[in-house]
Length: 292
Length: 339
Image (cartoon, rainbow over all chains, first blue to last red; front, side):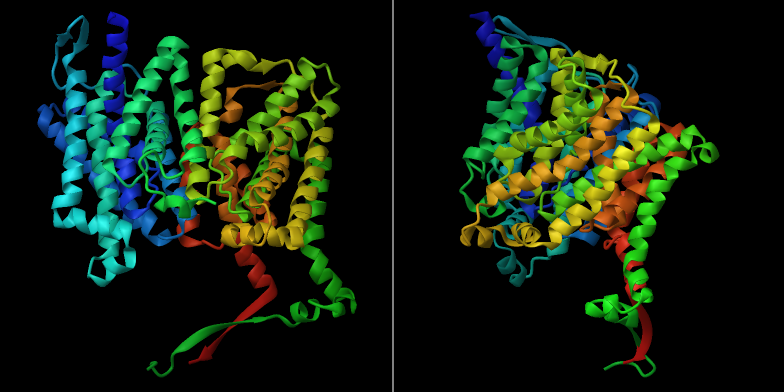
């Protein structure tokens, strides 16, 4: 059954990709309720920063990765301070403002003509590995490993560190958290910075699978949305499960129906989950307050 | 404690505003002109502009046509915003109007005017049905889905080559002359702006506003929120689908670009810049933005960046919108009073 094995392996890789791309958005949204739609823009921006420091400045790979994470975090902080804070708590204004920032970034890149074939990133590890009868390049395995690692790290961060506990406290019981001296503004800023930094990590790991293209930014928003809605924002496990399901479903859809149909899976998943289990597959229905 | 010599700004209604608020509105010409003046002036401006073709040239007449179409889309956005449905993908309505008109005229062989009418109405109803399953979502979640839908439509059309694929549907016959298209849109805009505002000020609008503010209590009053939202989406989509339909006959072609981001971001920007909540504000915003973006035409996609910059600036610095600002100056005066 080599086909089945191939589908399983590439489904797992796809799931890791989805999880990486979605983590930044869903961490911000889950922790502070800020729907940071500039996610896709920051994702592509960090890809370009990494590309620029590697290819133009000739920096070593780890330094380039660090630079792109740092730039993304700085942009996240800037977006929070300049755009999100003035409209904080006006949920729809937050959506519109961050959406505008994300679109502005992506269309600015398009206008600058950053759409040619020279924009590619090197894999973390070259070469390929044979898993039984399926040959996978080593970079894809690194993607899977780092997705699993990041998922675990976030889970640990949320449970074992003071900052993580404070962030989760804000998400769960805002007024109690405030009365315990947790600073709302600082936590919200931190959640946006964390989300943006995760977007950069995702960019460095996922973008080497192809060329850096502007439309990947819009795809990233769609993916982040699908995984977040499907998994719910309460638990990291929900996100992992959602990424696994969607990853397998997209690979199966592209094998069985056709390569372009994988995007339809995202929307079908969003609509189905929102209609049946509004707080996500592992949600505990607390989020019903978001829906009628 | 306040510092001595400190002042605060006080706003008071102008006398004529107070007089014209009730039956004394009919007391004299001054009150009548005060009330009707701005509305009539705007309507006359819209109706007269197409007649000035010799003076303005064809280019600006086309810009006018596009501007009115975008004003319709912005009005549509503002109406849905009043129900608490913030759309990030208004090009869905726009594209649906265009494609259905193209199908009506090319496949069903309807005459162009009938095709535009059918395309407009069927597209609005179709969008209502399409959005039906997600109408129970509130706030962000609804916006998220509307953001995804046009992207998805463009992708599906590209992948499956239905509806002409990437080439689009070409050869749509024009709808009469340029003037005919302009007047169709202008009449549509006037009806939409004043009609939808009227609708929102009526009891129907009261329920819609209540759904926006507290849908659970509306539901507790025994009003089926889902059906009201469905109705609001169909009615609110009509101006945008009309714009899409008429522009499709104007360009003689409708393609994937009808689902492009421009048509989602522009109505949104226009409504936020002009003044969210009012139909006229959205129309004013679009009327300001479209000529501005024509001047930026040479810069390609930088226009979208400019819209986004305007959008963020307007949200952060003039959250009430330009129209509301001007309207307040019209109705009220300010003075400094000591604290």
